[in-house]
Image (cartoon, rainbow, N blue to C red):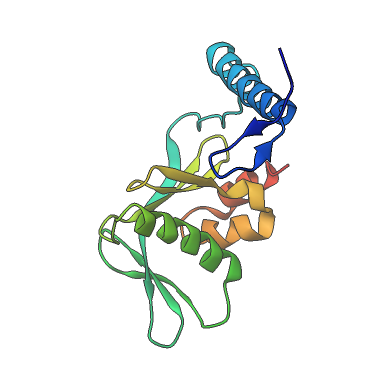
Length: 167
């Protein structure tokens, strides 16, 4: 086998050794993905919440003309919280990411978001429209509490115990 350069249609040359090296990298990558998919080695999965939700609420997040956000209970339309302009950075960033995914998939705001606190202490914000789930424990206790306050009449001890599980 010769490692002479490969001549392209426009007259330039391409080193044959580099071509074989790139092909080897692609094949090795495909083999690693296949191995991981078939054995589960190297795959990362988030555990599902155990047991029923201790508290949950379906929410709508509406932009206001003044730059604020109205958080409403999707069931009865009641105002749950009001985020004033230039505040609530974590809430804004989280919702921006979820809404961006909806727009990317051509979905609108018809379906509400679901906020749920599991018996295992996981506070998650789910988008049933796209299937995305954000585990809010991953962002620290302050950000966790930002969303925990939106749950219906959650006993303070429950939110505190869920917050205490943060690691």
